[in-house]
Amino acid sequence: MLTYLLLGVAPVGLWYVFIRPVIYFERMGVKQLRPWPILGNLYVIVFRISNICDFIKYAYDSFSKSRYEGVYQFNRPVLILNNPELIKELTTKDFDHFTDHKAFNNPEADPLWSNNLFSLKGLKQMRATLNGSFTISKMKHMFALINETAQNFSRHFMKKEENLIQLERKDIFTRIHISVDIKFTLLLLPLFFKYVPPDKVKFKQARYLRNDDISSQTLLSFFAGFETVSTAFCHGAHELAMNKDVQDKLREEIRETDKLNNGKLTYDALLKMKYMDMVFCEILRKWPPVFSMDRVCTKPYTIEPKYPDEKPVHLKVGDVFWFPMFGLYRDPKYFPKPEVFDPERFSDENRDQITPYSYIPFGVGPRNCIGSRFAILESKALIYNLLLNFEIVPTKKTANPLKFSQGSFQNTVEGGFWLGLKHIKQ
Ligand code: HEM
Image (cartoon, rainbow, N blue to C red; front, side):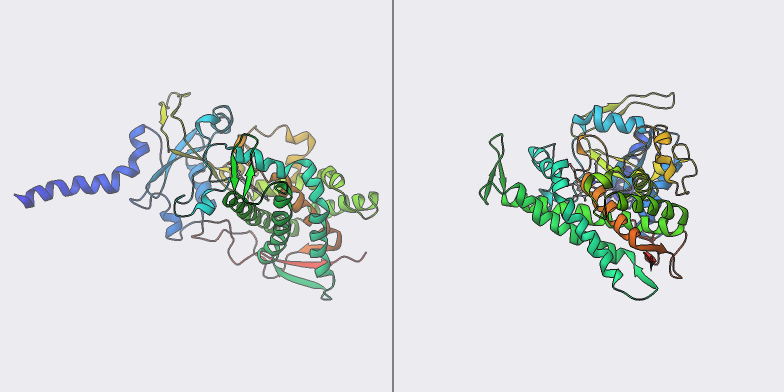
C-alpha cells in the first residue's frame, strides 16, 4: 500500500519541485526559453556553453518580435522586456511599482553591501543625499584630479623606450581606474559629509546617516565604477586599435582642443569635444559594460495586452524583470549593422533617429546610474591623454573579433585584452 502511495506521490512531488517552477511563464501564456530544472536557462553559463552577454543576446533574439518573454535565473522566473516603449513605461512612467533592484544577498548576513544605494529598497533619501556628490559643480571641482591621474598614466608609458609597448589592458585600466576611484571616494565623500559629526549625519528630514551607511556608499561607488569604466576602456581601446580611421579622426580633434587650450585641458573643453562624445557613445553601444539591468516589482502591476497574441501579465511583489541592453544594441532594427563600430550613429544628424529607450547605457528613470557624469569624465580624460601621446595598435596577441569568455557571468573576453602603444613623435 505504502509502495503504491509512494509511486503515486513521488512523480507529483518531483513535478512540483523540479518542473513547476520552470513552467511559470508557460502557465501565464508568456513565451519562454526552454529551461532546465533547477538551473533554469543559466545552465548555458554553468556548463560553459555560453557567456552571460551572449545569453542575453540569444534570449533577446529568440523573441525579439515579442514585447516580453520569460527566462529562468535558476528557479527564479525573470521577465525580459524586449520593447523600448515598455521599458520606458515600467521604469519611468510607472516607476512607483518598480522602485528597487534585486538585492544580491541577504541584508542580515551582509549589512555593508545591502545598505548600498544599488541594493536599498525604495528611492530613499540616500539617493538625494548622494546626488550631491555628483553635481556638475562637484565634477568641475574633481576634474583637475581626474585629469592629473590620466596624465600620470600616459607619462608612465612615455618614460618607456621600447617602440611598441605591449599591455594587457584589463589589468592596466583597472589599475588606473582604481587610482581615480580611490581619490574620488576618499576625497569627495568626506568633503560632502565634512560638516557633520562623524558618527551621525543629520538628514534634512530628521533622519540619520550612520557610519555603516557611509561605508556602504563608499564601497559601492568604488566597485560600481571600477569594473564598468575599465571594461568600457578595454573594449574602447580595442575598437580604436582596429579602426585606425576613427582613432586618427579622434586624435585630430584632441590636437585641435589641445592647441586651443594651450596644452591645458579643462572640464568644458573636454565635454565640448563632439567626436570624442560620438566615439564614447559608440563604445558603450557596441560593448555595454552593464549588459542588462533589473527591477523588482514593489507594488502589483499588470502589463495590459497590446497585440492579439498577448494576455494580461500580472506581476506581483517580488517579481523581477530585466531590460536586455546588449540584445537591443545588437539588434539591426535599432542599430543597422550592429557589429560595425561606427561613431557616426551618434552624430548630430543621426542621433535623433535612435529609437527612444533603445540606447540606455546608464540605465533609465529615477534609479539610473548616479555616477554617469563621473564615468564620462574619467573615460574621456583617459582617452584624451592616451591618444595625444600614443597610437593604439593591435599586437600579435590581440584577438579579433573579441569573443566573450564562456561560462562567465561577466563581459570578459577569451585570451585577455592585448594592445600595443606606439609613441607619437611630437
Ligand atoms: C561607463 C561606466 C558606467 C556605466 C556604463 C554604468 C552603468 C550603470 C547602470 C546601467 C546602472 C543601473 C541603472 C538602472 O538601474 O537604471 C548603474 C547604477 C549605478 N551606478 Fe553606474 N555605471 C558606470 C559607472 C559608474 C561610476 C563611475 C559610479 C560611481 C562613482 C557608478 C555608480 C552607480 C551607482 C551607485 C548605481 C546604483 C544607482 C541606484 O540604484 O540608485 N557607476 N550604473
